[in-house]
Length: 158
Image (cartoon, rainbow, N blue to C red; front, top):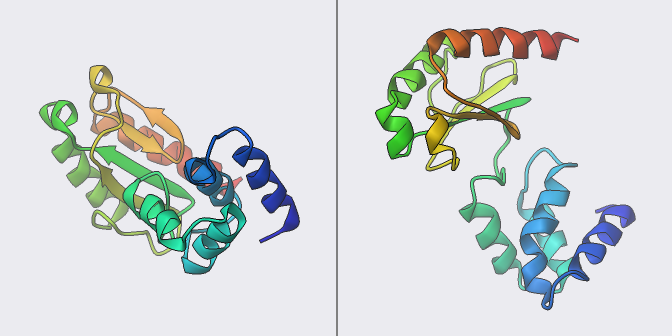
């Protein structure tokens, strides 16, 4: 891990009463600069925070916002909780799988898209919801998804 990253993590630690409380923000910082939070990275975070490695591993694997596996340039996370399910999220998942030619949990061969489902994105009033990386796309239907995929492919080409 670069010295700059260690310094940033240590700066975050200062905001908390215990070093353990800084695990989530430290992982978020590190994730911005690595492709995935694998074992070596988790160990380094634990070393910087001076906490047991298992604590860092537990947080990284519990929360869907952390990628412990390689994901595509665009990580598509479709909410499938009750509100989104009632608003046809399952149908949208099938549509995404069909359009991208991958199943839930898969990544397109070109590494552009990874498709996942998540338990809740906390946007029930605008269901169904899809998060692309950190951006929300709400009130979706098949047509809006198709437009979004075209836009993302264009963005990747530039």
